Length: 242
Image (tube, rainbow, N blue to C red; front, side, top):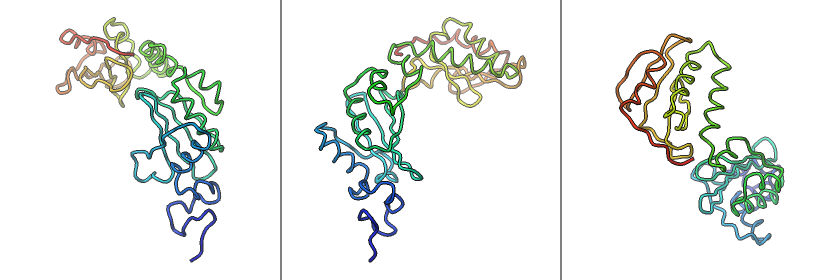
C-alpha cells in the first residue's frame, strides 16, 4: 500500500494535512505533537482533546484552573490558531506557523499573566478592549458603551431608541447588556454563565414605533420603548460579578 509522507495513510483523517503539517501527521494528532514539544521544552503542560470528536486529530486544548486555551490547525495554509479564555471569557487570539511558539504561548497563558503581559511576550496574539475590561472588573460599562455606539450607527431602527431608553434607567445600567437577534438582553453578570431569567425588550419596527417586551421567560407586553424599563417595577435585579 502506498504510504503518504509523514506516515499518513491514504484516505486517513490526516491525509489533507500531510504537506503543511508533516510533524503533526508523524505524531498522529495535534494533541500528540503539542505534547511532544511541551515535554521537550520542559513546560509540564498536559495537552487534551477538545470536546468535538470530529476535531480529535486537528485540535487540542490545555487548562489550569479558570484559564484555558484551544489550538486548531487551518486546512488551506500552515497556521495554528490559538484562542485564550478565562472564566468563559475570550481574552486573546492569534495564529502562527510555528508549533514551538504555540506551546510557549500556551504555557505562558496558564501561568495566569495579565492579558497585556501575554501579548507583549507573544506578539502572535492580540486582545481587545472588552477583554481588558473583564480583567479590571469593568466589563459592564464597556459593554453598555459598545452597545450604544453600535445602536447609534443605525438610528433609524427601533434598536437605538430601545437601548437609550434602557440606559436611562439606573437599575438597568447596573446590568450587563447584550443582544439576541432583535432582543435586548440583560444579565446580572458580564461573564458566563449569563442569566436568562430577566426581562427582554425587543424592537418591533423603525424608530419611534415601539417595542415588545417579555417581562419574564413567558408572557408578552407591548408598548413604547420604555416598556422594557417599566417591567422592572416587579423584578429587583441585583448585579453580581463582572
